[in-house]
Length: 176
Length: 93
Image (cartoon, rainbow over the protein chains, first blue to last red):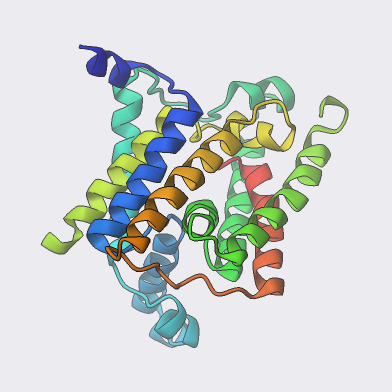
């Protein structure tokens, strides 16, 4: 009964979530020989779309060797992430359809849809581009790399906060 | 197709945990950069600590080998992180 209650709870402690994620990473490495990744799937999936639309544009070193295009492991992980988060939201009864998804955003920047969507679109491009340069995102490089004590992960986390903090300051100005 | 079943399961658990910890919400992500809610750091650091202990314990027992796909390019990792941070603080994901 307690397990079911926990599963239905809308929010877990981040310590519990994090610890379980660490356990998941260990199990993933033990059983599949891979660690967690998030952003790689978008890159390989993007590669296959470009190659389908314009083979000439997709014919480059990046999608041939660095991030081989194709629908593989990381795309299925992404699919799983989507379904898992959806089921978790449904189980916790926090699922809701909204155009502007966050109360804090509405309070500070207003309910205008274009503002949120523009910032989200541009931000997501930067996020994926940065992850591509660094060699991973928060999960694939910072967590998976960090737990193997890879120096690159700590450099990445450093960069992430060095630019994230001033960006938040610019966005929030007096309300920082 | 069968070889991708573990990927789906791992992804499912991953998504579940992110959602339950609230990290799929804009405010949780951006507030770590405003120092008003450190859930992202708590989550990341707990995952790293548990993962480190587990992975290195299994490695020292000779059961797993590390995944050597994170080469260190000081400029690349740092610049990538810098661009990533701008996107993360803006988009909130």
